[in-house]
Length: 531
Image 1 (cartoon, one colour):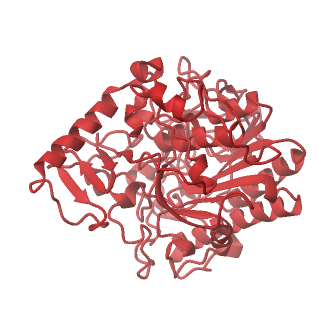
Image 2 (image 1 turned 180 degrees about the vertical axis):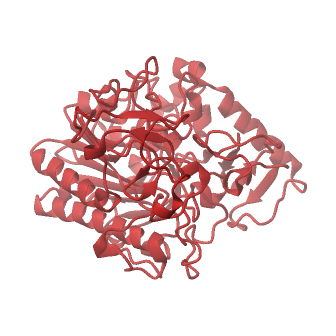
């Protein structure tokens, strides 16, 4: 069944998945409802981990997780950028279905992208008695959009209004202001005498900018990233005040681990859902002292090994608290990798042959396989079999699958692009429920994979869109997303997408073009009608 056909076939799907909504009532997975920990790396590629073929970067903790669980070879982020992928993971809907709010790459003062009241995974689990938390990267907006975000008081709506009982987050990306932590939607360590003001349009700060004083930078940056300097690194946008609250990049991984461990310790006696948004290897790439120079691939390799260290400490905590046996751990990434993304940190020069996308074509922002195919590892000792799965999995499926793990009934209108992958995860004989996935890039680029066929329609010479403030449409990172002719690939024989078969198989082009149009035409109103 194709995900985009869900609204038209929802009745049949619900019958197949046990009546009304998704449920595991007919196949209880465990005497106790399992905890769920979802770890999402930032810009980590398909080939960046040892268990996915990397040899120059060492990732023993994640590799150990893979040896204890199920490693997917056909897992996809629904977009090649962060905000839409994270939106889709939590809501079960492709981000482009959301027409009322912006779901492109959001700035730090953008309004909340998820409409409060949306049946997100944390909200569904919270209603079922789970305590829910998020630590790390958020990047889904804050506030209602009616008034500017005021970082000097509690910010509403935010993570709490979409299902999280507890949050310790940074608002957007590490390279965007404001460079602060928010705990339960209030800035941590803010001095009321030094209030925060943020702008992505004008330089309202009396601090130095990277454009004005490049000699003060730890890493040279392009013009888009040449705003206010925080901790020796210039950011996207301008920030005034909040000096005591500003984070130090070197301390970010330690904070993620500390807050994650504290959450696990505080809630070890009740079912919980914890979303951990790691910052690596997104720019600016800054390794803590104990990881600096530890890889054979420069700073990008160092921060991936740092990411592995953070993951290892989380897994060690689950073991120490004797939670591992009844905790499902899902490790993945929000999109494909990229070397240069605004900071001249020598990531490409120091790669020494390492292939972040594992030899697949493309990078972040595009719609090729290397842009959206991501690592995915799922561990549940004694329940999820150890091995490798070649089933197709999209991060939209986390909502339906997570709900099923917890025995939660998902409303008919929720997660219209989310498919319950639990039977396959548990190793039960069952057909592959997902046969297609839509991939979203920038510049209006989309692609669809159906079986082993991949179709990318032409976008025309459109200006780059959806890449955040200050982006230059002629930047090759974004301009490469412009597709001038239809592309058709047969992935079984051509996994690196080298040979365009569109001229040889016009009927297949027409078929996949129609399927993509059908899926995209079932927009928010129709998809949520549950007809």
